[in-house]
Image 1 (cartoon, rainbow, N blue to C red):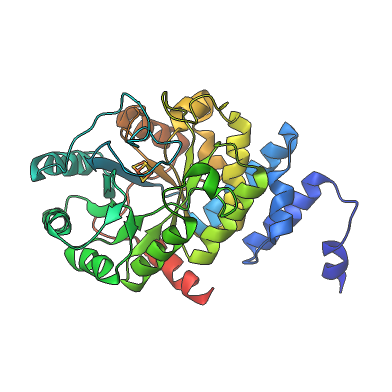
Image 2: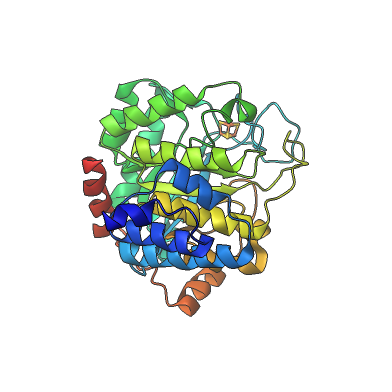
Length: 360
Ligand code: SF4
């Protein structure tokens, strides 16, 4: 009874309300969509620091001090048929982004060597195309997966677009793909402002095929594309509903030639607050800070972990540069964080996430 009275108290301070919600999450509970909207709407910087501090406690409770590192390699670049308005690789826009066809095995071997040398857990094979169908390209991709898996250098992951056929997802799984990235990008409501050549529903269906195949889901989005805070909140809840294991958060780095080139970048404190809100909504999932980190956060990069991030994309992004891996590793060391994960598969913590999600 007392707790109900406290829960419904209306005149509490913002700091007290943040603390109350955080304690509920720390105790294994959840916050509602309305409560999450309240967190996303916080503007006072002292309150934001409070929020970060609680998000940090939630990260420590559910993820410890381990930080999962991953990197990506573009296995086919540019000339994509889709019109995602943030993307320099779309054939719809005039950009300086490189274009090349499906790479041979050698660059993948080199990327796997580099990943191993840097202590990176997973290497994601990314392709700029609409999606993957049965045929010679799938055969070639599966061959790459098998070789990478057999080498034991890094876990081969993928981001290969829309999958419409369950058999394609099954073949990827058989070839050794453990985790597939397919972002929802934004809220269902905002998605048509981002892309019109495929639908949000096609993305959701792709994720269903992958889950049916037993592949773990890496799905997040891009913040700073003109969406509202409510869109960000809805994205987080959609990711919770689809059972994503890893949540990559990207922050728009407007690319010359794309329709989003003139968008104002998000302020760093808005980015940090958003990461913290995702941690409150998704306490057990891996929250990974990916593209747009260096350019948008500048000197505040290290605060992403206080905001609740538990994973980091290192090395260069698809069309832009990141800070050197050595600098990221030094940053983790200085913060007392541990990037030494099991390099040959999902860690015990990730397996625990799987078990938790099964109960949702
Ligand atoms: S985000 Fe992917 S699907 Fe969209 S245009 Fe770029 S490469 Fe194509």
